[in-house]
Image (cartoon, rainbow, N blue to C red; front, side, top):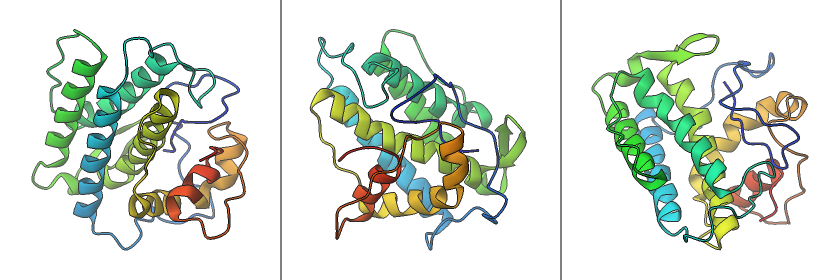
Length: 212
């Protein structure tokens, strides 16, 4: 599975692309991080999205975003839909009362982190469009989606555009072997050359067609 977060978007594609790894990519790379560290990174990324979502003003929900087919509300709805797949795929109910985007996200976030903290979760699989996949492999595109759209939300609302460089490096290692399929599928827009000396966070944004 690969993340669905092109910018600019030429078409609307909901959910994650289920196209597997590029033929030459080999096994799913996780850098040198331990798998539990990957879960910690996900939890931190979810907290980062929460901070940016909490800062959205009442008059900003229709602001345009770097994902040019989506305004702020549509982008947030997309993130909620994608991240909801984690608890649903791991059998953890989402306590969603449907009162608003913030409340819905908080319920999804809590359930996703609870699901990922279950004992032995990394020995399990969860559903994908092409069949069950290991939890570690399923988590990577969702981490990518969360990191990138946190930045998109911040850019759209004047929020904190900071991206953790270490987590960006993990996501980049996941994405780079799939460069060709990411472009041909419309998942990302054209790459931008990063400035000299750019850290992994800036490199990730440029790789996915975003302008830091």
